[in-house]
Length: 585
Image (cartoon, rainbow, N blue to C red; front, side, top):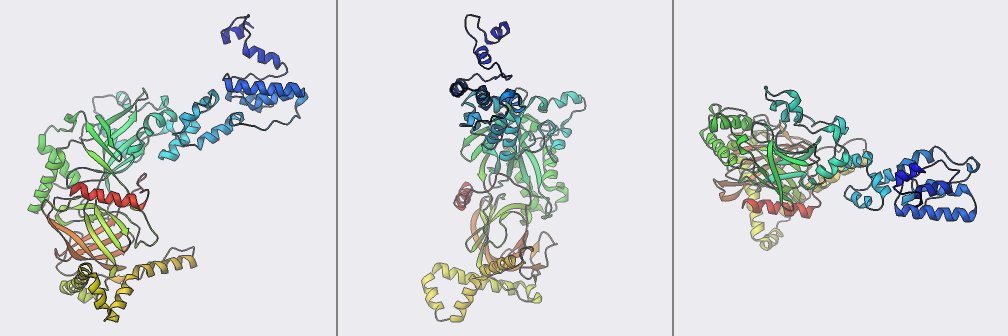
């Protein structure tokens, strides 16, 4: 009695609730830890029912149905009155009566955003929601977090790039380790509630506002960090090499369970930064210690280091004077931001079964401007490539290629393909026809009525893509175990006099279409669309011949996994494209 009084905080004159329960259950060995009013009401109701039916086994079953986590072992081990061992347990009549292990499984299936409301229901739910299994499942399913929290590190190359290279020789390793989060004192609930959930709105793909140059930022959960990776094309002209990545910022938890933002720009390691949400689908970053971006050798050393990272070569190795001017101009323009940037959300294009190939991101060659990133998407009978990174002539966000899939082009023999004049006449004829149809659609339709052969040819051209996809679908249905067969390849060679940054281009192609490319003067002056030839090589490569410029661009697919980047629907994606063009217009 004295022990009970000390636990409950009342004397002998005030009857202890827990002692009264034990007196009513003298035959039972369980000791419930639940004290909330809702459970006392249920227990009282069960006792009254058991009293009317006259059986202590009823009371034991009622208490077992409402037991908390601490009682699960006692009830699960069969610690009941021997005389009532054959009594069947009552069916639960409410969620609160379920065993704790079932509640853990149920709560694990709920979105993490509703779990705080569940915890407000009662003390039992609040206690169960402290289970690590629930929050671990939420971290994995909602944010892609992998591995065990106690063994987690930033994956891939990040652990070396972010930590090992930043060690100063005179600093002991033990002190350096304190820069990392204290894994032993963290749990999944802390990571979810203080890191992942508050910053969930910045995960995905973003385009930085860096004037005409643009960019591609991918914000991902990487170990116990949220890291903003700037994607850089491979060094020109190796368009088929993998993308390069550079960390711009990271967010992680301190021992105080408070998320901190660090700027990763420069060469002196992580330092203080800040992130602000400007509005929906837009946020900005700020560096609070820009002196970490400076180098001892001044601007010259910074330029040499930037040039080696950006282009993989020195200025002396770049013999083209115009290219040297463009490179120096880009360094001066981009370095003034000091990683204080505004980002706008972008989406990956939706995929449709009728698409000529899988839409997505591609790296392309753009002459003296180097490699740039474009987004290929399909809109009816049009294929469009929009720039994510740009240059002073055609900035990021502009429609660099517009391909008319209703205008296929049959390539001549190889000998004639080498003649630029032959290809120019073919494309110019289609271009003039398309322009007439745009300017005078009614007169063209009446004029074509007198030429059945021309009308039949146009109709057949408009159905080329649909027929090809129908054949592929039929083949896949008849042969489920094999993939759809691509169209028969045809020989391809660049015309003489056409410049190509990458001499290693495919010598066969699947299909060719008429299209236009956007060209402009410096500062995006006098923009115009010029006709050219779109060449589909395979699922991961295509090219475009700029007839007026007598140049060739080769595009290769970006194969990196980009989570949290799919467009909700086509309408949202097209609205994003319009906004991208307005940012740079």
